[in-house]
Image 1 (spheres, rainbow, N blue to C red):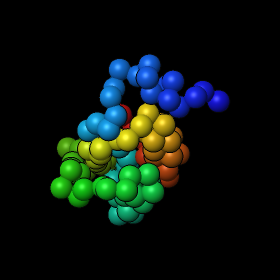
Image 2 (cartoon, rainbow, N blue to C red):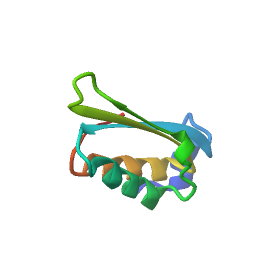
Image 3 (tube, rainbow, N blue to C red):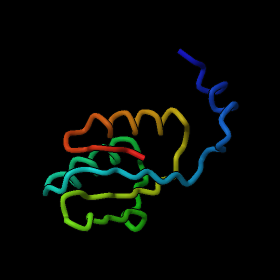
Image 4 (cartoon, one colour):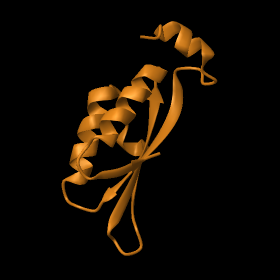
Length: 93
């Protein structure tokens, strides 16, 4: 396992930092609830005012952008991994 402090020192990002994460999934009622749950597990100060949601033109897909205050690269990596494994999520950017 890589030492987190060394990993952070090599990162071009300085933490804490604003960090946008876009999640794209198939439009369904429970998608937002599942994704919100993942964010709430990883981000202690999730601000609803910094979340935007947009449906695709045909309404088949939904893109939700969360701008979080990332505390570390480790936090972001764990969050993205769990989002990618979440039912209904097609892409995490």
